[in-house]
Amino acid sequence: MADLIHSRWLQPALAEPTPEALQMMRLSLLDWMACGIAGAQEPVAQICRDMALDEGGAPQASLLGKGRAPMRAAALVNGATSHALDYDDTHFAHIGHPSVAVLPAALAVAEAQDIPFDAFLRASLAGVEASIRIGIRLGRGHYQIGYHQTATAGAFGATIAAGLLLQLSDSQMGHAIGLVSTRAAGLKSQFGSMGKPYNAGLAASAGVEAALLAARGFQSNPDALEGQNGFFATHHADGADSDAPGFLFTQISHKFHACCHGLHATLEALSSLKPIDPDAIEAVDITTHPRWLTVCNQPAPQTGLEAKFSYRMVSALSLLGHDTAALNTYSDALCQDPKITALRDKVTVTGSENLPETAANLRLKINGHWVEATYDLNTPMPLATRQTRLQAKACSLIGKGKAQKIWQAIETNDLAALITQI
Image (cartoon, rainbow, N blue to C red; front, top):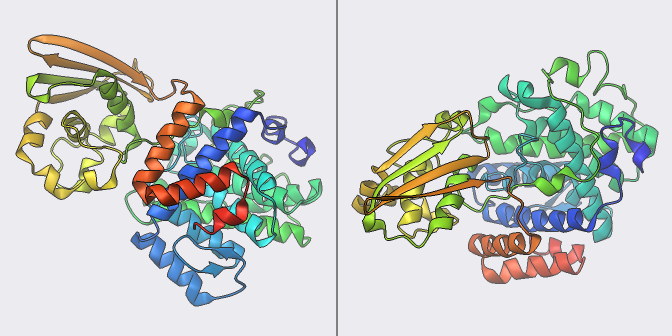
């Protein structure tokens, strides 16, 4: 299998999976489905789904929300839908969300081809691992110039997952990767609009399309990823190749708070200090990496959406006992609550280049004394702890009964039962 991708630094994605990597993939599958089901009534999801259903076609794969459509359309709809809440997994080195591009593609092909769960899970893992390594190779330069790695690197991961499930030959896989090099797209200019989740759907759909065409004999330049005038050369790639063994996907970060990921280290640090009497708090000082100051540092949010991008607001909500994992916590009404705004105004936020982007330092002044906490989102989390937290998140998003049925299907390797929950 390692010969399917000839780049030495991509071959680890096709290695025999470790038990840890497979379990992490199962957990991300649970998380992805919960986010997708919860986001199925968002406007971007409804628009994409209605378009697919209106167009019709072979009912090959299920759509999040309702209905069935051809594989490519299902991948598009389910990719956009599962990223609609922006609550899915993230890989900081990759600078993107791996699962929302790869899992919709893999699931559409697996359902249409009646492929067993284990093969689906392994292909998904190979796809997300490949997208992470490609994202790292694209690097910060690709992201800073305006490309969205979730979509660009994700399209390659979706192609690899779909190609494995279609059992493409080495030559066919090369043509599929070359073909998707001319299809991979997605811009950060879409952030804050329906275009951001649509980017994930584009990646998933492009991956399915490239793999299906290659399976039919479509030929492309198989060196279009790395060669002259290829994707890396033309898309400001400035990252380093990594042929490190093992699965980088095990470093995935799941969102346990329904707000910007830049706020999560602060919220985790706050959790480590609880319980705290909020009435005794005199001041809260937060130090974060400077990049987040232009992303999620709204000082006085007036709407629930703005609250999701405010250190001051989420800190006050957390300290006053509001569940920052729940979607309805971020409401316009709570932004006007006098008790919350009073505590919010005691929060000061500063930036420090000495901190990694994944970390935050926190100081609380309580009755004249300072207490401190630090948290880095790259801190390893035991799989059992991660599972407990993700199951609780899924229950919060879609209800306990449905969350339990999804996890049971995943645990028992029952793809048909999993699909019935979409």
